[in-house]
Length: 84
Image 1 (tube, rainbow, N blue to C red):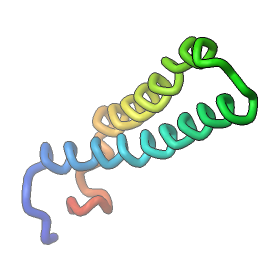
Image 2: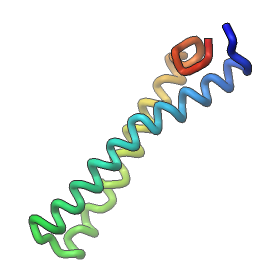
Image 3: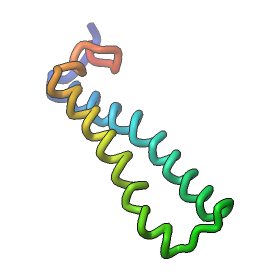
């Protein structure tokens, strides 16, 4: 209706919106889990270093895979993200 841009710009906007909408809360969970293990469970830095990769990997993999799926399934153009 009032959209300015192309299908590619709408896809890019949708991709990064989805990535942020999923990745941000998952990183928050990772951070909360890290501090829980460190402060409440008294995990050592050495032990935390062994699982730290998962605190980064899970938000990125889940966020990128859901955002990529939206591109593959052509879900972003014509949705309520401002591209009609």
